[in-house]
Every structure is written in structure tokens, then in C-alpha cells.
Length: 239
Image (cartoon, rainbow, N blue to C red; front, side, top):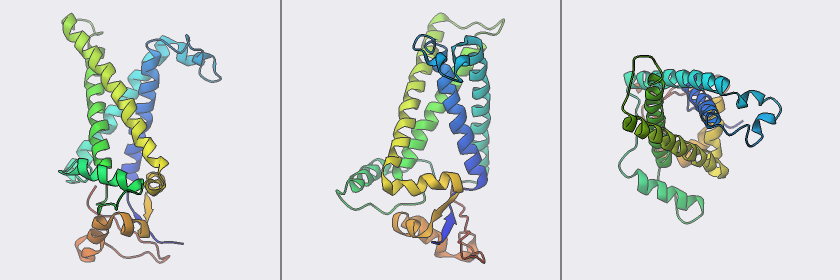
């Protein structure tokens, strides 16, 4: 068995999948508010009869929104306090993403990567930004339904349009994020979102900057000892 190292902790994976599943539910129930599931027969599919009920989809939309907001706040606080900012975009990420995409199609070598690829950092900012925007505009849309709270009609129109636009951009961003795993070079990263681990030889080959940091100084907390079974169990301090 080839040795592996820890790439994502259990906490990181739990938050990731909480955000992912609540976002999927938000998108699905959001489209159900239009309404469209009865019109196109989706509500007739086995197990989806509830999707044609406006009130059910509305309540589920609110519930998914609360779960998503809680997960996002926890994510920001958790990594902010630990000063783990490895997923934030860096200067040169656009060029780096271009070079990585070229390399995937065999049009050049990949530049040395850190724990996260340049396109992952850009995707994080794009998807995260739209999640925040859809959350803020969604909150305003909820507040307008409460007694005693009134917003100007023009303001609500802008909020509704931004909510819809950010939701569409979010769908496109998630689609592009998932499409990246169609390439074999990226698939070990998908596996790590389930197991938390990635092969050591993959890290050495594709993430040399992270690899060097992991083994630079074992006493500093960036590295660690192997388990009795020979599997590397390092957890680095960079998100």
C-alpha cells in the first residue's frame, strides 16, 4: 500500500459536505419557488412529490439557508482563529490556473503547486463570494416578509435580481468545480474529500511546495512521524 498523508481533517470535511449538501438543497428548493417542478413533471417522479408543494420547498429553503449560514460562520471563525489562509487567492493565480489547464491537455509542464492549486483558490473565492451574496440577499428577502419591516420597491427589485444572479453564478461555479474532476490528474483530490488523505507520491509530484514544507522541519509542527503501519499521519498548519 502506498503511503498517504492527511490533507483534510475531519472538521474540514464535515464543514465542506455540510456546505455542499445545504447548497444543493438551497438550489433545488429555490428553483421550486418559481414554480417549475409541477410544470415540467419533476414532482411526478418517485419520491419528489413534495417538490411541487410551495410551502414545503419554502420551509426546506429556509432550513437549508440556516444550515449553510451556520457552516459558513463556523468555517470563517475556525480557520480565522487558526490563521489558516491557504485557500485565499494569491497574486499570479490567474496565470497559474492557465498554465495548469494547459498542462492537463499536454501543452506544457505544470508549475510547482502548494497544498491548493491556483484554480482551487480562485474557485474558493468565486463560489464563496456568491454564497455570501446569495445569503445576504436571501436574508433581506426573508426580512421583508416580517411584520413591521418595509423596504423600497426599487431596492427589493435589485435584491431579487442579485439573489437570482448569484444563484445562477453559483450553479455555474459548482458545475465548473465538479467538471475539474473529469481529468485524471485531479481525481486524488476528490478522494481526499471523502477519506481526508492523499497519496504521498501524488503530493511529491503535483504539490512540491507543500511537500517541502511538510518535511522541512519535523520538529516545527509541519511534519510528524509515521504510524506503525507505515502510513504518514502528518497534519500541516496551512489550510
